[in-house]
Image (cartoon, rainbow, N blue to C red; front, side, top):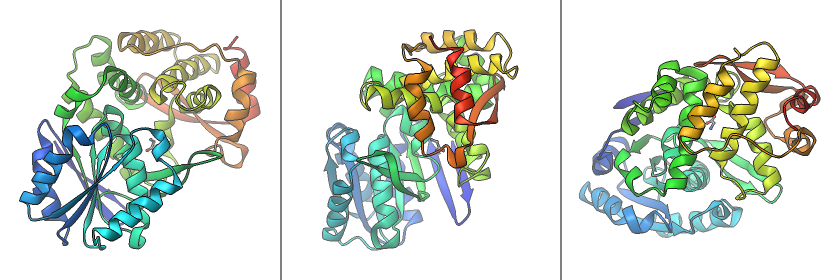
Length: 350
Ligand code: GLY
């Protein structure tokens, strides 16, 4: 599958197919003028794929350097940004050259922000290696790092020149990371693709297929609302409560996907309560999540989640755009004040 995602001042080529990594060199050579490449990867992914990525870029005429950061969220730190800028400098990267993010969401966000800011912006190609990065974080140009007082608090929109998604890479992904990514795939079914959801319900959709469908949905949403002012907020289905659970458990205590899974169930139940969502929807979501090994309940009370919901950076001007489902396949934004949301949550959570 190849999609051209058109945003305000860039076109991102998205290539998604089994074996796409072997085309990375030719894609980069077509899209960038310079012939230097800095590949940023992490300590889990580099042993598996760095040499191959280097080889295909070298074969396409690039002089290539590899930079490996420790795997895990702890690498999304300002200090790591300084290290990447220094490495880019050592490799002689100019604005005509290219940064390649080879990894999951952490590598994509960190190197995306480093590319957005180095020399006021260098081209980047995202090569996502986790399911979550393939279907979500590699597409749409959101980049960033964590600050001591919160996740993703510094960042930039920086659209990649290309995203190269090789579904064969899923074969080396640990089961828990695969499960985590499935939460986002299920989310796409919930908010915009009833057929995908039905395929997930009966297990009849292949990984290559659901990755491609998820990418198309995300690309369409980003094209229509690059800067997250409207429709793109639908991608946050399950995320308001999910983030609050993550914050309460301490980041790392629960995976993002697991927290979002629980958040989706709560959002569906809330939708029923508010008269927006049909009665059968929460149960359907619960059974799909269970089918893919995701959790569906939390022991946190609404009061315990309240502070995190009120302080979320996305809850601008004290109005929160909570995402509800009009049905499976149709997400809607439901403006609500955080205090009112927390009152509603009290009726659902013990
Ligand atoms: N992951 C949500 C977004 O890209 O907007």
